[in-house]
Image (tube, rainbow, N blue to C red; front, side, top):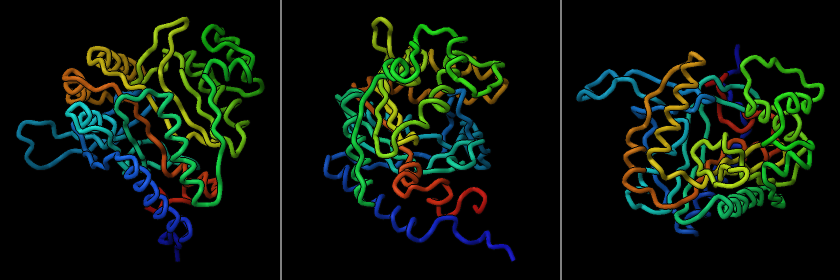
Length: 324
């Protein structure tokens, strides 16, 4: 008889998750950051061409609203609507969903922690994110030293290339013996491949590395700081080789955000993939006035993996995708 009804995680892991959830809530309660809940289903989807969303059809009355609804890939848009409405610092701890992501480090549904700080920039938020991770590590008797380095400096130090000026041929050469089909790849794709194949695997296991100020072409929903070169005011936080968090000094310009959504949809059209509706509610909120703020999303399951030294995300989920 099949044993797939059994949990994929140990009871020890499940108990640790409960302690972690309690520690997260205590961490933010001590800083007067409000916990909120926002919709899991939305009439808008994520336009990011590198993220696939689940959708479903609602069978009840919609009062002329769309029947197609999208499962959230993060709570970012409704949280920003709350900020624009004047709520203040807030966070959400809950499930998010991404299609096509299942494997050793990915599950189609997973737990994300996302929070926003009014009046902060991305560099200030790095410190608080590292404090939270160390609060979590303390539950298993560990700690990690924070190191900060800019994106450009990391590539110069470790690979001897300037990510802003290097040619695509130089980027491909820097991959060494890693063989990748170049069809359809952009400069940013090659930079990402260098990160995942050459840089991340060498990050020390007990080091928290905050990588900040990305190329402007990788701005996502972050502000771009004018300079030579211009940079996207965002950061990613790694514990050893595991990427844990992605944060932004948040873009507050509705017109610019709308243009980025449209650019995403053009790329999706080129790739022949689904075209989720733009989030017009978010654009209206930005137009009304989003306070200057920074926000970050942290993968709780990835953090659990790091805490336990687990090699598979299944080891920290009560029931992973194969057993759901």
